[in-house]
Length: 185
Ligand SMILES: *Cc1c(COP(=O)(O)O)cnc(C)c1O
Image 1 (tube, helix red, strand yellow):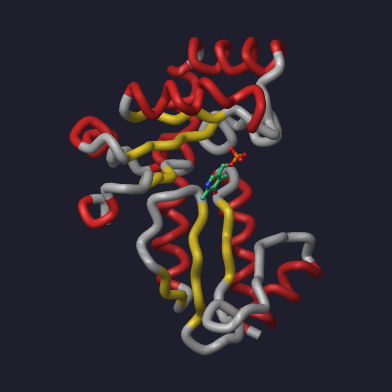
Image 2 (image 1 turned 90 degrees about the vertical axis):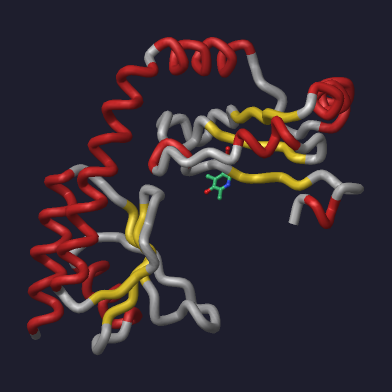
């Protein structure tokens, strides 16, 4: 893709990078038309602060820097800069929480497979799963009645899937036990 599009910028969105660890940063080093973008909204728990950054060729970064105060609908405030900085300085804490989410995700995958779900292997903080006999829409409604909220999209090709965000280990244990009850009925 990058080689066939040398005349345009190819953006690689690494929003979930800390839940997988496989960055494409080396591509930004080898190609001057690649930008890698990452956000503080996911593994750094700062959704809503609108903190993100791009990495790439110096010329490309300079071009963005030159226009950022005239084009950017989400300029960073002093407060968001201070918060972003504090988050970077506390990277040990974030590594630990990301590891917890990964461990819980792996546990949840095993449980979902045991209950008859299938899914693409997830390296994010959610699992997009479908059940082999029970409709997603039914499971979604039953979970909602129990105040357990997963996402269901009424769109072609994905309407039999549930998007399940990974919570704490206790939350996921509760989710799995309630899910099991719904499926047994
Ligand atoms: C969350 C997310 C982002 C970035 O979110 P911001 O809050 O705008 O930083 C970008 N791409 C994907 C795929 C995401 O899930």
